[in-house]
Length: 358
Image (cartoon, rainbow, N blue to C red; front, side, top):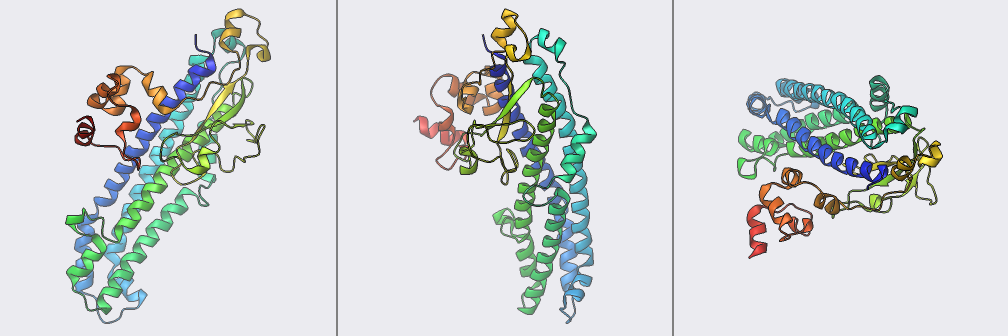
């Protein structure tokens, strides 16, 4: 029989898979908003360059590029609105998930005495809006990317005109080429920056919500453990902290000297680490009932890798995560989870996997 802490660990590992998918989906949605303006941006850029006079001062170029800069501004307004909707939805979802997960693993007898609490949405949102990640607030990061993108376009136009390049050449410099899927244009830099900000904002928001959810239930939670995603992409910063215990609320090291710093999900860009709440034992909660004591033994769950967790999931869950063909290969023991990646952590295509089997 699994203890409450072991069951909670399984719940949270599965939850991290869902959050990763949310992050991927939101990145695609945000980049789609940005890319949807490309045709208008290209047309406005061509018109601006063709009508540009001999005055190449920053003010004159900005005036000529007014339509381009308005399109850039409109894209970021839409992006900020989409991100706010996502973070608001994530806060509500995370609060409900953490409350549901605790209710699912705690014996009814414990819940009668210690009802599972949930933090207020407004409290978590206030924290998310006021807490910077990687040194800036979300709105500051987005404003910086917007202004940086506008400046890059302006500088490329000024340099191109001074060098006597054609309008088509300057536009290619800014927008990129179809042959390279437009990744060779200067606008690609802002796409990479936005992806990093979106992923970091999602992980930071989720962690802020779970912080308050666990703190609201400090009567049943003893402390938390840092939980790193154990794969080839895990940072050295997170590896050293994996499964280290910290106090709840104050997040001070317990039995070690490695500091919490910004915490999991926030300690570096695109951090995928999270935390595991460790439930108090039945005896610490004042219960003597045998079944409750067996379930709430207070023992910290053994370390579980993602591969071990995936192997315990149903076929449907494995197929949902890996795809039907990869899921079948996993269940047939033809390939292990690590075999689905190359040595750089890139997920292999089905054709590449078939080559490995030949």
